[in-house]
Image (cartoon, rainbow, N blue to C red; front, side, top):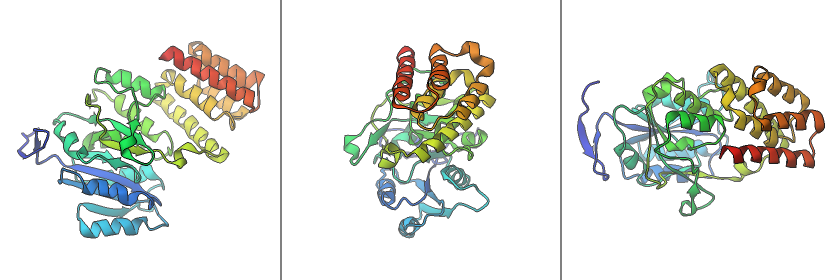
Length: 338
């Protein structure tokens, strides 16, 4: 690798090589309510050397008009439209944006989330030429970022790659999608986001990254938030139709994890799907899940065996009793794990 030429000095007292540029990639679909605030959080960055690639997924509101106004005023913003040859969805938009990005490093931001004013400056100050993925802290917020709480309490610089992989596989999410700064070369190497998945795609991406041979990651010890995840009613309210969709996506994800050879570490995810979507779980789903783990029956934890008996033999249809009992089994598993 050729030597890097240093010419920019961060406020965090580390020279930033001119070759290192950061591209913020934002998928957009009918996000007019919060999009302007998200883009303003980029305008307000202390670091000025960045680009923002926004990929619209066919918005029918005025999202593209909002982006166009920013693009006219500031050439660092670039609006694109998902090509018809790409599957519809945020993952296709993210992958297409990554293809177009000129930066060596990628930050994936949703169109309603925010960055702290020093986010890009601070993150770039922590990079070196060998990192594949750097992880920083993200806050959850409802209305004001000042009231944010940690997205996760599982981040620790002392954890190994394998320990973080186990957390994702057990469906304990240690960091948010916007927490990462990805080397573009590495992101492409693991084939980016899986466009088959419209849920669990962030978990899938990180499982493949952490399961890669000799992946080089770094976790920031500083606990200040540099990105902010907006918890909207969309994320907290869920209809039966949406529950059915998410359960289908979860089962598809388990099939993909079996192909990756890591199914025996996914019991937390299995139990989560069975209790969380108990209202729509039917006998066909149960047979599919049992067949997935058929060869591993002797390795199933007692809680998984209890859940299969509860929702298969004893209480075959959804009910308040089954919901309470399945949640109790899930909590028992979590208590033992933690």
